[in-house]
Image (tube, rainbow, N blue to C red):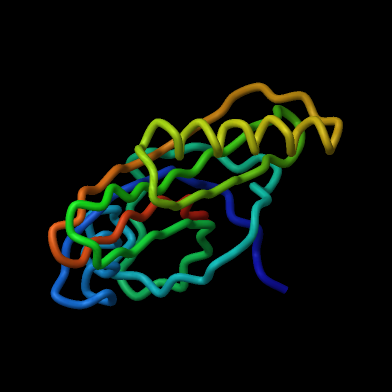
Length: 152
C-alpha cells in the first residue's frame, strides 16, 4: 500500500524550448518539479495534507502530482495553465487543473469555479482555496504548466 501524502504546494511556470519536450522540461524546472519523476494523479487532496509553499522535493523522487499543461508552436499565441486546491477542514480536499489557449485570469477563474462545483457536488464545506496560474506568449515553442505536487 502506498503512504498518504502529508504535504503539498501549488506551482505554475512557463518556458520556451527547441522542442515540445524541452519546453515542457523547462517549465517543470521553473515550477520546482523538473528533477523528479512525475506520477500524474487525479483530483483528491488527502485528509490532513498541509500546505507547505517552500517544500523541496528530493531529485529523482517519484512525485504524485495533479497538473495541467499546454504546449504550443504558434508564435504569438497566448497559452495558460492553472490549478486550484479546495480545502475543507476535517476532510479531504479537491484539486482542479486547466490548461488552454486563453489568458491567465480566465484559466484561474475556471479552476476556481470547478473547485466550488466539486465541493457542492460532494456536500463539503469549502474553507480555503489555493491557486497558481501562469500565462505565456509563445515565441517558437512554449509550454505553460501548473501543478499540485503531493509529498510525504
